[in-house]
Structure formats: structure tokens, C-alpha cells
Length: 173
Image (cartoon, rainbow, N blue to C red):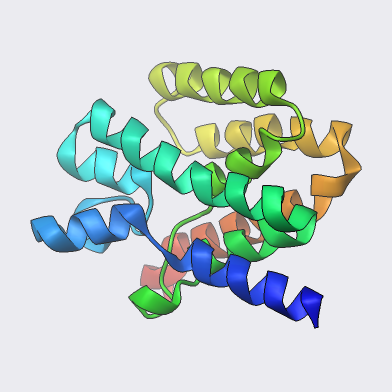
């Protein structure tokens, strides 16, 4: 029963979409003007505001941090699922990168800070679709070093594979 409560609580927590709520209040369609999902990066693409990106990313990361702190790796996994498929936004959410890093920060904060910093540098240097593959490789570092977050990383991989498959194959049918 405790596992069900942990999973449900973490899922509902993950379903709170700070970027989605911001976009709804401001009248921004992140599926058209963002990157095609509810996430801080989509808000950055739509608004060109790095400060807003950072604030919303940190708020999303707090969901992973809280879920992992309260319920461990299972909490992180379900918070990520809630972020990806939020009940408050018709199950259309974000990629859960910030949520993943938020949980992983409790395992090794310096490693997460290093990985996130490298991602920001890559974003400035590489301007093509390959940067997403580079990001996934960087995000593997915490999972490789700490087995308890491997399921969360695998979920992140599956979400990215599904999202980009749909994104690049929508027009080819």
C-alpha cells in the first residue's frame, strides 16, 4: 500500500507543469511556438528568455528532488512519468530532463551540476539534431555511476526516442 501511495503522490507531483501553467496564463502554444512539448526548453524557444528558462527548469527539478527525497528512486520514476504524461494537461507533457536531474542531484550534486553545465555549453556550440544525442550521452553519467537511478535514465531514453520518432515521422505517412 505504501508503494501505491508513493507512486500516486509522485505522479501527481510530476503532473504539475510549471512551463505548461506559465504558457497557459500567457497564452503561448508551446506545441506550435516551442519545441513541441511542455518543458522549460519550449518556453525558452517561445519567449527567448534565459531567466524564465532557468526559473521554470529549477521548479521542474524541484519535483524530482522532492519525489526522490520522499520516496527514493520509485518516486523519481513516477514524478518523471507525471511530467511526461500530466493529468492536468491531457497527458501531453515534457521530456522530464529537469525532473531527472532534480532527483539525481540528491545522489551526486556535483556530477549533476557538471552534466547540466556541459549541456548548456553544447547548446551554445552545436545547433543541429545531433545535440540531442550528445545530451543523452551526458545524462547517462549519473545512471552509470549510481545504479539506483538507472530506471529513471531508461525512462528518459524511451521518452526521447518516442518523442523524436513521432516528431520526425509525422509528415511521412
